[in-house]
Length: 189
Image 1: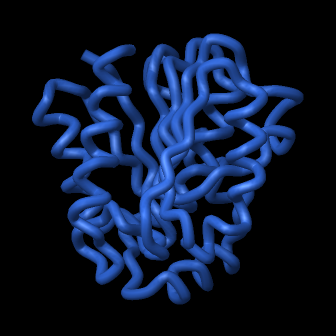
Image 2: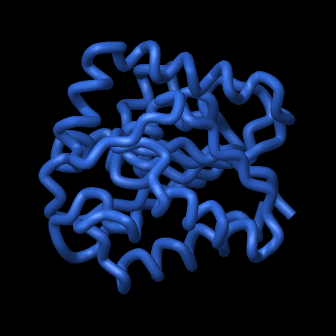
């Protein structure tokens, strides 16, 4: 099966992120869940974002890159919102990437290189009216239009972290579909 590194969102390595990783493990994938916050979790996006602003987005990205150093190169990078930063950087810059799953966010490809790498499939998943994703939708559309193996899935609604069952924004129907699509994606690697 596929080896995966899954990066958490701004509220930390929550029980919902851990449960998502367990769902992938249950179907045979090896999933690593580095804790970019060194054990901290936050009760709201605002609190978590405040912590990230204190330490810096660049530091969070580099913590993710360092966490992947000891992992095999032929891996799929997955990120929930803030976790998209290291996931996307690694998928674009680390040799051997097998794919990327970007949940709730997408960074302009130009942030990490001239173009998305050939042969690295990618999916972007978000709610169509998510106010946080509104900042990223143009980057996601550009990624999909410029890359041969890129897809974007938009779900109805406006919840941001809808795939984390431990948060009030959880949407069970959309999360189930996202999980199914992620498992199919990983199964094809």
